[in-house]
Length: 247
Ligand SMILES: [Zn+2]
View 1 (tube, rainbow, N blue to C red):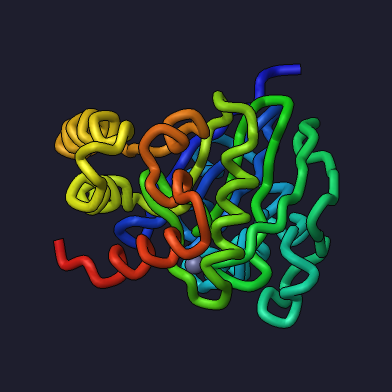
View 2: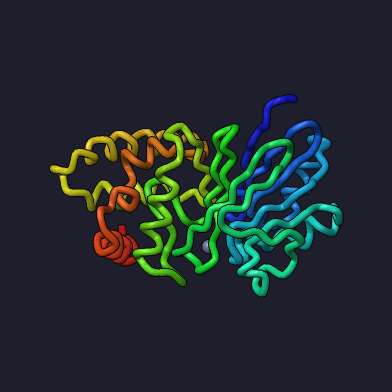
């Protein structure tokens, strides 16, 4: 069987839609809009078989009706707990569920914090993680519906995945996250140098117009202050700092 390929489409300025493909079939994760996704799939001759949603925000599910109009048979996977807010789902999933997608095993992980029913999709065989607005490169999602303790537990859960796991975060927030982290980190913290090094590399990538996604679990463990937070209290302090940062 050919290897699973993962690509990204930038939409709405800083949103990423992820396209998984194998053997002429495709699945997409968090389609904010439909048109660019339809164009990309048609250009590659791909048939959409599944849409994966991590949470209910419109910049993650907004393109689903348009994709279903083009590919009515596509399955829509989403949190069953959040079925009232993700009503187009055809396959409700929950923490611990294991399914198969494009010949690939997928594990569903509950990662509340940004929203109360946020989920992530882990593909252990190929080493991919689609984590929506929970873990960002150098940051984490805002706490709209969950507590700092929930977000810390969710980040720890993702950080416990194999270090080489590619982390597909749903927004291009990396440079701002790392500029905040570099301005915030205690210079004596052993991760301060790694944050500075990463920020320099990210600035160069962005200047070339390149995406900074995917990240990896290993890189986030080394440079993400939220992942490194040792308590819910510390994470809450960091989150408040980032929320109020004008940088
Ligand atoms: Zn969101």
